Length: 284
Image (tube, rainbow, N blue to C red; front, side, top):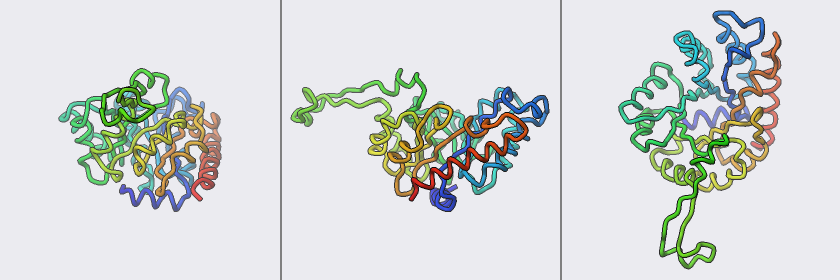
């Protein structure tokens, strides 16, 4: 899916909602537990109930890979069921040396024809480049995540000496400081374009969103963490929206497990509709 197509869908639906199909078999409604097709039946019902309110679906591959071949088949069947009008994301967080990444790219762009895949940038450009070489496919690079462990690396301060900055009052002795995640955003944004490259920014990082938009003003941001993780949609939208919307806000558990009985799909539709209705206000 091209950027123009994605933006068009957002404008038509007045929504930048992404529904996360993080389908935990332990949380399936009782009437679906134990069924060989329980995961697929659940996902199809969720898609039918929410497709009018969202523009994207994100499949967290861990919930499927953990089930072996059966899980992969469920992921493939779920992906095939998602309408072509919806942007599909493989939340796989891959990233390895070039020839290995090329195989990952083939897996999630050809064998499983997702529109996008999440990628970890720790191994550098040659680990990301194979994903970016696919036309009309998107690479979504981890930027600043919402988990506690992001403090271990992503927010470490990097320093370098620059004589030209020694006259700036608030910078002592010419030392420039920035966080590692800022360096990642600045560097990786040069590997692709706003037409094929997005960044993951956790919804609980709204205090950093203004700074992130300064670094990557035109790129789309995939923002997980709204709902069960406590992210605030209003703040994220106020600080993160750009002229093309530029956001895909993901909600998983808050939508797909909004209800745990046989009416789970109806409850999911209500939750997705509420998010869409709120997003309408911010897109005006």
